[in-house]
Amino acid sequence: MRTRSKLIVGIMVLTLAITTICFIPTSANAETTGQLMYRMYNPNSGEHFYTANAGEKDNLVNAGWKWENFGWIAAESGNPVYRVYNPVAGDHHYTMNEMEKNLLVFLAGWQDEGIGWYSTTTENEDTTPLYRLYSPSAKSGAHHYTLSAAERDMLINAGWQDEGTCWLSNYNIEVSGYKEATCCEEGTTGDVLNKRTSEVLFKGQVIPKTNNHQNVTHYDAVTEVRYLDKLRKAYCKDDGTYIGFRGEEDTKIIQHFNTYHGYNLPLNADLWTDEQIQQWFDICQNHLIYEDVPAQEVIVVVSPEYWKCNDCGKISYDNKNWQ
Image 1 (cartoon, rainbow, N blue to C red):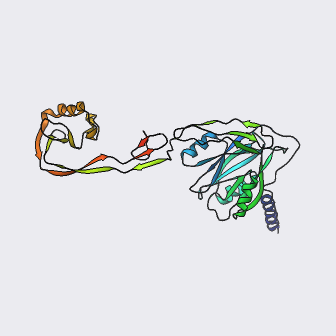
Image 2: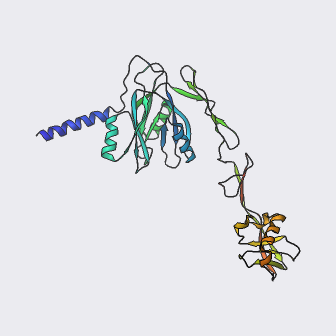
Image 3: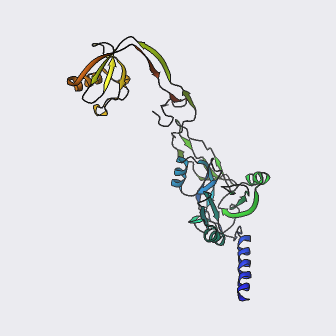
């Protein structure tokens, strides 16, 4: 009988904890300081991620996440908002309710990542609640958090469930003057304003140029077939390298094979200078065998495949490294 009573009490406590997840205490005093929260989006999984850590934000941007500017202004102290991670779904969840955090960690296998930020303990004319929404069909990013009532309403109309408010922002904010950085031009985060008074809370910061070339034109490799009536080949029996050229006097490279990198010469013989060609002959002069190669057709790459950024003019031969 005692065991059953304890079970009933436990269920009642659990039910009470879950139904009070989004409760926010209020009082008359206000906090005026705070820290900007970065709002990130993963276009592959659909997850939104929130952090006060600029370094973490930069790492995610480098990993392909999209920075969606600032989400809200968190308190520097107050009620902790816990951050937990689901290693199976690759999803994060945030809650001010310690019981909910413990249920996810100890019963559902989520990882406790500590305190993500703080919610102010007081409400005033500037503090603004964040809305929490849930998508029953999402595999990742099932919860969403926003200051915007318009965004909340749009998601509800799209099938998300309204879970009320979950914590407070020190201010209702808007961003003015945001400009995205490009490969050739710096951007700016824009000023963060108090939406009620238009007061500038945080001045905009410069966003460095990126290496993300988006306005790109792709050029296919250009080749042509040339007929060589005769090819003279110089073969170095010492190390197995050889080059082909026309005639004993004309050292214009026609073909080039297996150049030993110890010569510090470019792998592509077409890039050799006269001095580099002479260097090869000097190194191998005592080990050369000349032979004539029968007439043949050869495919010559006139221009390799490459990508060109139409904004900054840089060129890449692999669409990764730009020069």
